[in-house]
Length: 345
Image 1 (cartoon, rainbow, N blue to C red):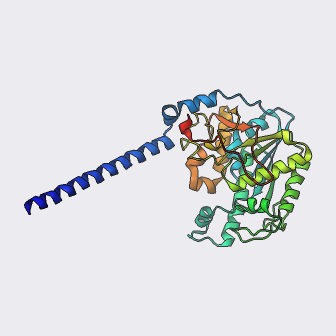
Image 2 (image 1 turned 60 degrees about the vertical axis):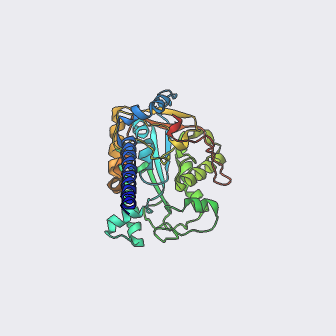
Image 3 (image 1 turned 180 degrees about the horizontal axis):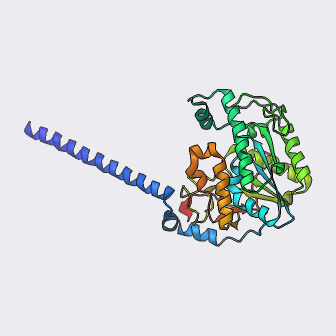
């Protein structure tokens, strides 16, 4: 009996030691992940090849005086995240820069909950959020040097652009419940949420601006609204014979990108895991570019309130642009056959 009791106690002690070992290993893993995602020194320690790869990229020719640039932004804040430094530098160089926002960002329900001080924001709260984000976008554009006369809001439904791309029928906003553009300052207030109307409005902006350079999301971006924005814009550019004017960028790049989180202005922006298959060019930023980009991001107060470290992580020594796109406007698919994680570096 004593032997059996001793064996039982020994088994419990062994089980307790094993449990302690597993918990310790998980704690070490969590600490390692936190370091990789948040620490500035992690770039050099963990991603030396990724840093070298960015520094070896060809430099993107700067936008020149006299050129006209159109930024096509799916949501308020995307314009600053991807290309805020480039935009600021282009304006100072003498280029004419225009920005068009396809949605008003009324689909971020966490923001809506905070504004409405409830866990379940009402439909009117998300529409109120859209209006506030439009105000913030205008302030961000001003911080980048873009005049108010050069900005346009289309007001189409956040979170439903890919559904619009895939169907000619009207769609309902999954967040505001609206079937039409509800914003008075939009280009076409009251326009039914249909693909044909989005094409008409975005096409009219293209025809008015006649851009030499169009900055638009890549279909390799993870966000469905970004994919749809890219497909609509590519289609309209192709119809006008302007495909060569496209310059593509990624904001939602996968695997906690960009790393490390937070403000690390002395480090490069790495190639995103979802963009490894694309030939990137590096747009180097000077200190004034970075300062104006950070000021623009700070203007997006509702976003900075809930994901500051993610947004600040885009304020780096460079931005990334590719002239190659792998999207297929026929069905919205994209090629990511060569995508991988940072383990590839």
